[in-house]
Amino acid sequence: MDEVESKASEARIAYYVLANLSTESKNKALDKIAEAIWAKRDSLLASNRRDGEESRRLLARGDISEAILKRLQLDEGKVGGMVEMVKSVARLEDPIGKTTYAVELDDDLELYRVTTPIGVISFIFESRPDALSQIASLCLKSGNSVLLKGGSETKHSNKTLYEIIRDADTSLPAGWIQLVETREDVRSLLSHDDLIDLVIPRGSNSFVKYIQSNTSIPVLGHSEGVCHIYVDDLADLDMAVRVCFDSKVQYPSVCNAVDLILIHKDVAGSFLPALVERMETRNVEMRGDSLVCDVMGDRVKALADTDLGAEYLDYIVGLKVVDSLDEAVSYINRYGSHHTDAIITENPEAAAMFMDYVDSASVFWNASTRFADGYRYGLGSEVGISTGKIHARGPTGLEGLTSYKYYLKGSGNTVDEYIGDNKREFKHQPLGKAWMNKKHRRI
View 1 (cartoon, rainbow, N blue to C red):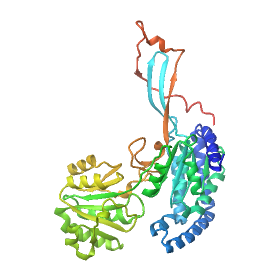
View 2: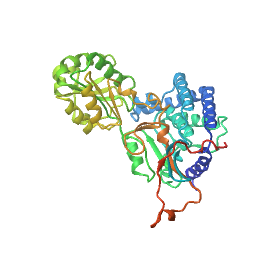
View 3: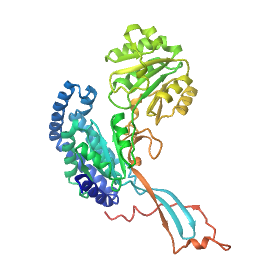
View 4: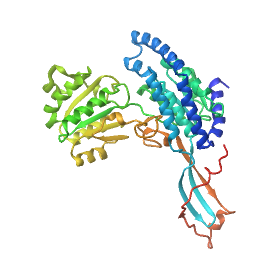
């Protein structure tokens, strides 16, 4: 048994205990973790500075981008946000033990569908150490054990944060949280479909596709965040400038930042100068099609074919003029990644059509694409944003980490009673009560 298999086995054993913890026990553990992170913030920040020093050398060699360097950096404010995130998960409703379906099949024969944890989750991520505390908190609250593998550029931060969470005075089962650290560990981890129930990758397109192609374990994640905004002919142009600016520059290195802005031809002449002027205040590189370049001249670079469907994760944005709402929708459905797209318009009918026809996990009306986030959605946090349509879609919080099982309560019933000439008939009547499982928990 190699080290990864041993850790996965420990996580599996811990899961059987964790899955049946009371809400009170889980919330107390989360509060203890939040306290421990804040109490040991100096140690965490020292580890993060070490990561930053090593990553700056990689940046100088061209091995990583400026965006990655920004994403890995922590300060006391970000640690405070991490602590608040953990506390916010403790305040969320427990997703486990909910009765989502209850029916009386017959007299003294009752069927219940009840939410349960998934089991053992492997979370593989790049760049951002705060992702570790997010996933750990959400897994704990949803009763799942977790194996974590962070990017090498944050190895010191990840190890320190993992140790803080593991060693917090929580009374949780040993092994519920595990850390693996090498690429060889990842290959081993992806092979253990007998011990791991779900893999959640968070990173670049190539990274996620590698994970999807090299495991038989179910994978939850998105490959890219190619996001668009369409500025309609009936848009409030001041609002459009404000929303487009926020969507690009508020945090450009994340998956919900806008990559390309589509502008209706009837407002291009008045909207583009105002937008370009605002974007120039933050040195955003703008790449426009021929119509945009006709209006803005050399203030905008030419949009190349490779920019169509590109995810920049940087201070770069594409600009394209379209003839109609239909053209904008068709473009987004072709070149987008089904992550987050928005329309700016004062026309409710145009907004409704856009939101119905754009096939993305999140579709916004008069709002920044940066709102696509589990914390902002009120989910406490998120394990990632899924662009798939099976099991979970969009920002994925606690509910995305749950499954369910059926409980059948009988009184000696047999199937034979419902077969033959004198068979009994099922009643299939809704039950106005929940399964008792939350009441009988002992831990």
